[in-house]
Structure formats: structure tokens, C-alpha cells
Image 1 (cartoon, rainbow, N blue to C red):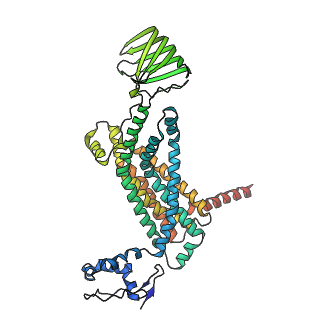
Image 2 (cartoon, rainbow, N blue to C red; image 1 turned 120 degrees about the horizontal axis):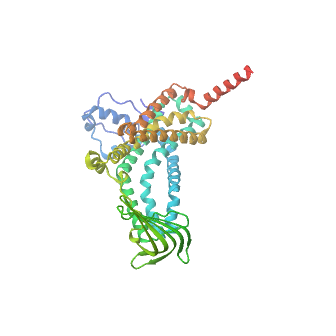
Image 3 (cartoon, rainbow, N blue to C red; image 1 turned 45 degrees about the vertical axis):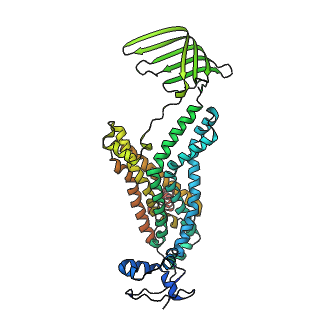
Length: 459
């Protein structure tokens, strides 16, 4: 007897209760019912449960390879495709949005520092892992809401439910996609992010240092030179003359100097990569321990070495591997604040990828019930949910940094909260109830309407 599975394009035969010790002669000709039996995943599950029985069947590789593409059903592949396209579009959109935040700084490197375009492209590539750590969960949630919002708007979800497909069955391909995105995000968080951040800082330092110059601007505090802050009231770029000069020289922390000058001239020595500031009619103020010293000058020359004209970029916890973080947590640093930051970063790298599973559980019920608004509503709901999630994450991280919460609790608390919220959404969706319940926009609008109507009647 041959049955037809509504979730599979292949006919299904009931599996035998006991696997035969004698290998049957399977007829693998096209159109035969016996060949279709081999392609059914139900035989895989029975064979795995039977243990040695799977080996007794002596599957050859040609027979076993035909099972692999047949394991996902038509429904699985259909939902998987529906999620993939908006996921890729979301990744592109969110990455572009994050990159725009760095665009002004990158444009400044090109315009004022003359950094080559090839090195700018490399800097962007090194930034992508840190962006992907955030954009993958965001794009995944957006893809779920858009995909299931479209299926619900076209009444395809109703047709699936009428065919006996429940919410748990619809979640199967979504959880498979969540597993892929979680593993990818975990690999990026553990390996790619520290490498990318370190390479970005190294390349940025070399690129700016190789084309270093004193970027003096009128009425702007310039602090690109380590230990120096320069401020001028007026600056002639052609003659390189300055007026109203103030310089804070902290290159020797034990002997800081504050310099005021009425006029100044900037000259560059390209071979030795030095800049000379000739200051005129000014004074030098020096406070050392409990003593104060004032020196008036007619001319004063200040030499600056341009090889160090970029502020040293210190290496922090974002650039460390897991091994370095563990060593720092266990006693590599004595500063309690730095140690706390390392603990938070360590647990963040494992908690952030798990957000994909959280969004899968919360996104499917919301997408199914977002029937009327379609893709526009799905985008709005995804943005709202992401804002709420990252506000909770930011608040939890702040509590962890202040020592109110343990670092592990601070990083995993948002996932636990939204996991419970997603479970509540799933239960209400399975019971054919409103997912948001009293928090739904329609329920809130009805409540407000009732209040307004009752207020009108009292008048």
C-alpha cells in the first residue's frame, strides 16, 4: 500500500516493524514504489533508532546520497526560500546603515589625511565582522516577520493549517535557519571580530601615520597629536600663519606646559617628518607639584615629530581572543573595571549569537498574526522589537558594568526575557488567540476609544 504525504512530493510506504536481516533486492527503476521508500526520511529515523539494523541494510553511497536532498519536505524548502531573500536584503540594509555611522570619519581620512582608497576599502572589510555580529540577528528577525507576514497576508498560513500543519511544524525550517545563523554568528564573535578589530586599528594607525600632518583648523581643539592640544583663533592655510595660539603640552605628564602666543608660523620638514611651530610674543605657564612658573618669550620654537602624530590606539577587550579574555579575568589585570569589561565581553560573545533562536521563537507568531499590514507592518514590528531588545540589553549591560548584576546574568538576561516572551507568543498563537493580547495595537485603540466615549457620555 502506498500513501501520499502532504508535506512531501514523494509517495510514502509504511515502514516495516522489523528491519530484515536479508537485504531485499530494491528496484531502483524510475516510477517504482520501492525506490521511493528509500528516499523517505522516516526510514532514516527508524534505522537510527534500530542501531545496528541501519548497518544491516548495507546502503551504498548512491542509495544514501539520494536520501539527503529528499529529507527536507516541500514545505521546508518553501519557507526556507521565503526567509533567505529578505534575510540577505536585511543584511545589506543594516550593514549599510551601520557603515553610514562611520562614513564621516572615513571621509575625513580621505580628504584631510589623503589615505588611499585601497586602504579605506581594507578598513571597511575589517569592520564587517563587528557589524555582522549585530546585523545577522537583526536581519534574521526582519526576514521572519516579512516572510510569515507575506504568507499570512496571502492566506497561505490558513491553507497550511487547514491541511493539518501546526505552528510547531512551521517552526521547523525557521529553527534550522536559526541554527545556521547562530553558528555563523558564534564563529564571527569568537574568531573574526577580535581579528578584524585588531587589524582595523593596526591599519588605521599605519595609514594615518604614513600621511600624517598637523590638521590645524580655526577655533577647533586639535588633539590628533599625542600629548598636544592645539587651538588657534585664526589660520592662513597658504602662508601657514596663526593668530591667537593656545597649546597644552602634556608630552611629559610630570611637567605639563600651557603655552599662549599672539602669533605663530608652521613649517614642515618632510625628509625628517617633523613640524616646527615658531611662536611669537607669548608666555609659558608651568605647574609642577606645588610650584608655579611663568616664562614670557619673544620667540619660542616647538618641535613635533609626525611619526607619532596619531593618538595611540590602545588595545581593549573588543580586540582580545577568548583565551586572552580568560587570562585577563583569572588574574591578568588588577584594574577591577577592566576586569569587569572583560567578563561582560566574554559572555556577550556567546549570548549575542543565541539571539537568533530568541527571535525565531518570537518572530514566527508575530509574523503569522500580522495579517493585514503585510510587509510594511512586518518591517515596523521588527524595528520595534529590535529597539526593545537592544534597550533591554543596554540597560542590562549597564547594570553589569556597575556591578549590580553578574556579568553572565547581565548578558543572558535579555535572551531569557525574550525567550519567555516568545514562548508566550507561541502558546497564544497555537490557541488561535491574539499574540500580544491586551498589548496589541487594536486592543489598545479599543481601550482608548472606550475611555473617550465614556468621557463624552459623562459630559
